[in-house]
Length: 341
Image (tube, rainbow, N blue to C red; front, side, top):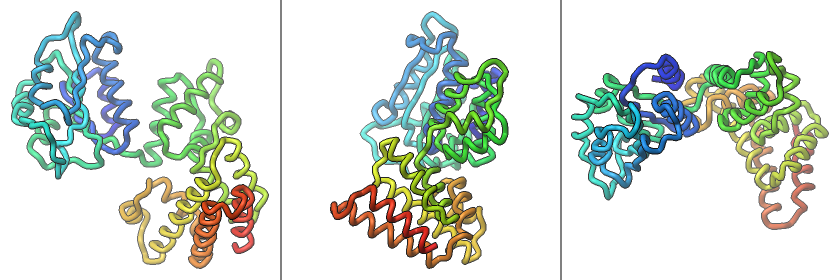
C-alpha cells in the first residue's frame, strides 16, 4: 500500500488495528504516525493512552502485553513500536531477544481498543515472510518511499487542502523546481503561503516567486542552466544569492560537482541505450533529479562534462589548501565553465 492509499483509509475513518510503516522517507513515516494518532485519540496529546517502545531495546512480547491492556480514561490507545529491524531481510544482531510468535498470535486476535504502529525505517523489508503477509490481511503495510514527480504534485495538493489553500498548477511546478523533493521544506513553504494569502485567494506563480526560499539543489541547476546559456552574469548572480544565505563556497563546489556528475552519468548511460526507468534503478539518486539531469545532458558533450569535473576538482583542492580567495575562485570557476561551453 502507498502513502496516499493509507491517507485515504485514515480520512475514511476505517478502524485499522495495526500498521507497518517502512521505507526511506522519514518525513512520510512521521506524517502518517501523527495522522494515525490524531484519528485514533480524542486528544492527540493524551500521554496516558499513548506508549512508545524502541524495538532495539524492548522485546516485542513486552510491547504486545502493553497493547492488550485497556486504555486509561478513554476508548482507545496507540502503541508505537520504533526501529522494527526484525522485518529486514537480514536483521542486525541485537541484544534483545524478540519472540515474534507472540506478535503472530496477536495478529490472530488483535484487540479493538489499541492501534499498533510498527515502524521499520529501512528502504526494504522482507515482504515474503509469513508475518508480513499476515499483517497485510489484518492491517496495513505501507511503503513510505520518496515520491515520484506526479505523486509529489498530488502530495502538494493534499497538504494544500489541509491548509485550506488552493495552489495553481504552474505555481506547483515552480515550487517543485525551486524546492525539489525535500518534503519538510515543501511543507514549510506551503505553510508560509497559507499565512500570506487571504480568503479564497489562490497561490499563484507570482506569489511562489516572491516568497519561496532559495534551495541550494535547485540553485545548482540554475547555475548550470546559466552556463548552458553562456550567461556568466546570471550564474554568478545565483552564487551571490546563495552566499547571502550563508552557504559556504567549498560546499557549493561539492554540490555543483554532484549535479555535473549526475548529468555525466545520465549522458553516459543514455549513450549506452539505457531508458529513464533503467537509469532510476542504476543511479542512486531521486528519479526527479535524474529527470532534471536528462533535460540538461543534451546541452553538453561528454568531453565538456569531464572538463567541468576537472575544473571542480582543481578548484576544490585550491580552496581547501587556502591558495585562493574562495569567492573569487568560485566566480572564476563559473567563468571558465561558460568559456569552455
